[in-house]
Amino acid sequence: MTTVDDFVVSFDRALRTLAGRPNASRSTPQAGAGDVELDTDERRHAGGLMRVNHTGEVCAQALYAAQALVARDPRIKREFMQAAREEEDHLAWTQQRLDELGDVPSRLNPLWYAGAFAIGVAAGVAGDRVNLGFLVETERQVEEHLTAHMQHLPAADGRSRAIVEKMRDDEARHGAAARAAGAIELPFPVRGAMRLAADVMRLIAYRI
Image 1 (cartoon, helix red, strand yellow):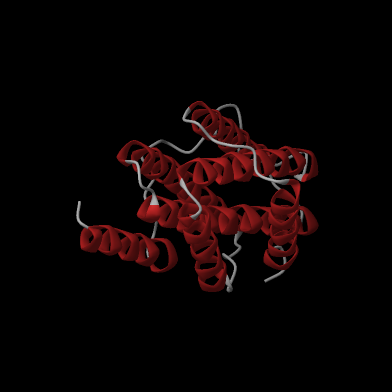
Image 2 (cartoon, rainbow, N blue to C red; image 1 turned 90 degrees about the horizontal axis):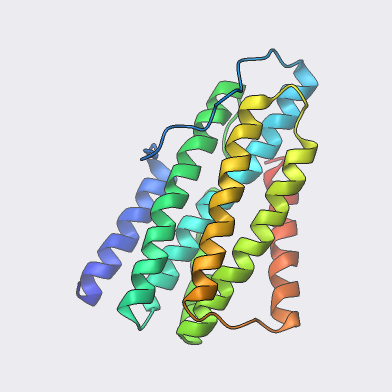
């Protein structure tokens, strides 16, 4: 595709992420997770956690679209686009679960999207191996975050737990693929800054 085509695709992804209803290519993970009635506090807490996860997937769409846009190697560009397509399943699953819980996405998602897109461009401009290293570190931190959510979700909320578990498996696979493609290890200050930014996002998205 031409540069103009790339920008059109990126703009279309932004519109679909922020204004549309994402469509999953895979069925929502629910095996063995039947409907269980949650009390008011459990439902509110599960909704907050799933809102955080939904916001994370909004950021993933922005991040990978930006990284693909500036990637130099066509093979690496395809790597990012494939990851973005699978992350779109996560976006749809978390949106569906929010609906089931009677909750809503973060009202700040346009802000989160813009910030993640800018970060993705910066990572990509630094070079393809840094670009891949950023993906690896992102997926590592997301995997840790999802593992924590498995522990914090209400024990009775098997439906949310099934979604989070499958998302975690996908994130680990994306990170492994990026490492195999030649990712470099990011410096500690960069990793720390990424973790701090993610912590701020989680803290705010849980409530707003």
